[in-house]
Length: 357
Image (cartoon, rainbow, N blue to C red; front, top):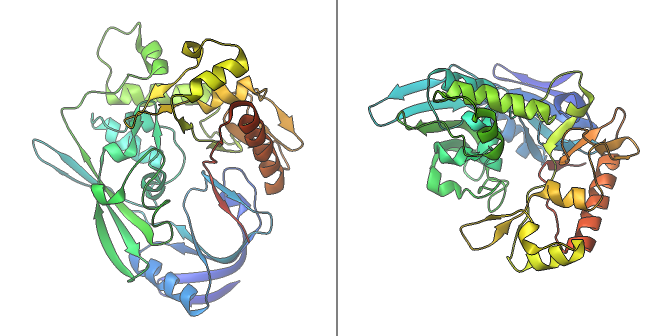
């Protein structure tokens, strides 16, 4: 039942959150409202402040684990949406997308115009507004590579601000929105800037293999469809009805570690250090594949712990096997983290946001 209503905002009570998440897990929100305009966003925040309520911003629910008791504050479900605004020059193509736009639909729209820059981010679930928060990335691209600015509500002033790319402090799965200022801004729109002369990115191994026997140059749309096909094979494309898709995608971030840890890992597995897969980072450290670590610690595809499990197609995807609760997922998470820490001395970091009562 609605508890508060205005021309721009309707607030409901005790709304189940599980249907709004790809894990299909979680209790109810004490208060809940759809946000379809900037005016509604500001009004909803004021409603919460008048009642001393915590606020949580819900997008596509694809990177979210909601606790079994739900959330005792106000959930803002972003539905801000409108046609993408595009302006072009000889040097740049600028696109402004509202936060509630489906991310994959936006990627497809850009690729259909023959524009490169985000084609490798096809098939990632969620909304445009969530992409700068996590600086989503895949197959050799990060969304920060094409972000020009982010429009957001500043909760300190209740004014809308336009933050240039450099102010967002993007890093690996990081930005100011989830690190230094995690509770200050709510993303309302993102301005992307593309180079019309850029070529599709096919540097990632899976893509190189996919296009190895195709002689003609690949278009952004070719790469878009290839990435979706690869993600589908790995169970990372959310398809309704497929059990492996009741997940939050990759549950652990690839750890970034000092180079000296390679010897420790190699010794623990009786390997040559050169056999440990890694990628150098700009700061002189190494990024390790979390999936490789899980598999060497005994956590293979299809591993199950009660109602929680690991996808049969992707080692990093923890799944709801049918009737899992949040505590089932966290029990599996904890066991994996403990084993990896004990075996390799590495603390894996959880990727999905956790929302609790």
